[in-house]
Image (cartoon, rainbow over all chains, first blue to last red; front, side):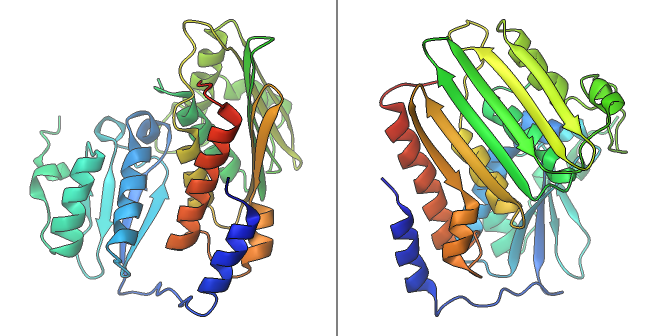
Length: 124
Length: 185
């Protein structure tokens, strides 16, 4: 079973390699709506998938965060991508698989995954 | 409607975050003898007046401004009462809030607990300035995760660095397995 001793060992290993994380204007923010509406429609696995992928692929210029109700509850789970100097992209009705496509094509490839954007929805 | 109780916990704990709590204590305890599953969420946030406590169980009460309905607490209450359980909120302004939900453990309408580890992990990762004490118990077997202990060991190393994040996940999984000993809820 995991113990606090193991945590100490990890700390000692990490001690000299903790870099200061860039939180500046060059960083891309990925925001997941995590209010009741988002959580009920499946935002937690989307958030987990995004943050795992960003860590695994070592995307140091991307910061994944959460927010409250974005006000479009019927389109949840919603993921917003804010790149510096570009217009915000709003992805709707997300799931972990779609989120992975966004990571590969948008965050890494730089191309918006148009088919999942709010603009593609027939808004009534 | 939430599909698993761990999502209710995540949702209701967000209220504690918004109440500017610095310490949030979450307990999940199954008692097979009494046939109950008790979930409590306690915080030291801004608390509520008696009047606010009464209105918070009303779906048409919310403090947010984007919508006129707030379903977090009503969902949780409904999930508990549907299993012949109990639900209560105790709160005091400037002191904090305690939300208690008791479920009929074997009741057919009790939703599964679901991925509670993911809920706790998410709360810890995304609220780096808040301390969490999480207790998980089945009868007399239990484990406790206390981020204050982690913080003491780690100093400046952030919880969301990959190694620490992975450690917290494994800590939750392995200790939960140790407590469960085959039991599932």
